[in-house]
Picture 1 (cartoon, rainbow, N blue to C red):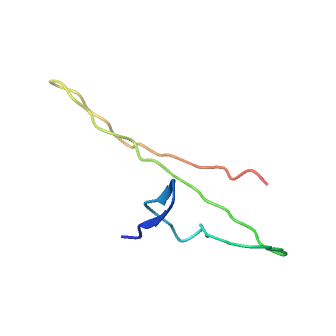
Picture 2 (spheres, rainbow, N blue to C red):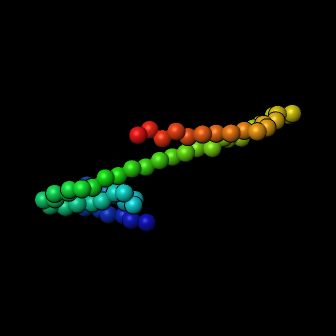
Length: 61
């Protein structure tokens, strides 16, 4: 776990697409993308059936 403290500034987590830059910084050619594809979920109750379920995700360009 990353933990950085400086005065009143406190950073608990730096993830793979994050950064901490101090001073004069010029960033060129940097991009970031993320995607979350969630599943069907849960079926609760009595006598519930799901047959032949199909899902499709269409990416926007």
